[in-house]
Image (cartoon, rainbow, N blue to C red; front, side, top):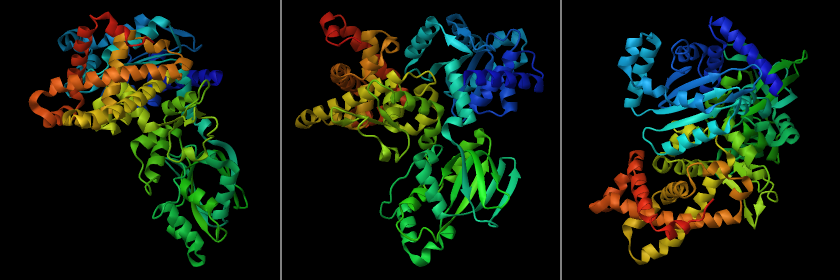
Length: 576
């Protein structure tokens, strides 16, 4: 795939450079990146790379993302060979672009119109609390010094308000973007569907080419038996079961009635398929599909396959859309209205989530990362069971634990939906190692168990304030304090050295249990100090906003500084 990607990118960069009369290939490269990674149209992407050029202060991309309340600052290094070595000095130059962006008077003296405008926009966005995302984009692999620098920066910035984060976008990440853009991995390469002749029409529009027609319910059943859940690789959820009163139970009831089954076409929303292309057979009875997936209609399809009666008499509305990959997410979102789609569910199709899922599945000690509701229905339990426990990590649980671990416990507790929007790049950054994700999740397990052990003691003491603090996101705040203690004890870059077999071992879980016990004690102590005499009412206010994080972190840092004087206390926390 690497060769195909390099050829594609070289061709696309050349096309963009010619189309927009750009002086440098690097500018065309970052225009491509802004289009693919940030989802901008080409004109908006062109505006985002307007700072690139003479005296640009190493800033190749500047974009204020109002929808996600962030400022994206980028530097790009394009090489046709894909062998550029990402360096620490390049990264530091990018990070220090904020120094002159904040110096509006100095930029005005230099007379660069684009930079003056960028500086003004930067200042306004920061005043409104926007985060900063540094994107160092290069076609190759990073040096160890560059990787260490990025980790040091991100660890130092944990919990800062507004947030800052460095993302290293190397060849591996760019290849992943290419795979996602082409959609090859998430679709069935080719297939055929029998349609009802004379019951269809076609149209060409800005979104692409579309076929709308009628198929027999038995044809959907055949497709499901042939491809299974692979048929829904681009859908945001798998089959949810036929619970009483639900949509799927209604489908079942309709099919079980002789008279109602013939009305199925009129009652049901139908099935939507996206594909790279389709061709009807001249006889009008068959549709040949290339790289296709059902993006809406999983519940209908599986309900039909599970039905025990009258499937042959039922018909289903079918839409087939041959559309560019960048429109597929919108098609998924707007066609899934029968059962509303949350932003977190739409992220199940995100390349970063798929990368985490694929890497969690690897040995040693695989985990099943559940991205979509209904996925565990077909889970191979033998592969993912250890010590009698099923090793399943739910997407939302991981998101909350990882957010807390990375310094956003208040967001994880009060506004977890923002993890998938405003804070997505901070929590699920492109350079997230699966070892860190598993480690954060296991920290969450340890915190939850520790809190359960403490509940009886606190009830016996009638300690209402402590109970209040632990019942309201306590596991997330304990995880956040665990992260602080782990960095103090092991150094800010300890996560980079953790290997898969260490992270997934019983020994690590036992070590995390020790950290969770200390973290819980310190969290309650620090929170009580911050709340003061305000009691539960003040505690509720404290837990309400991420802006409380600096005061919590300061309290923990001060406690560590005081206690670390006693070397025995530090040694009691196991090293990683």
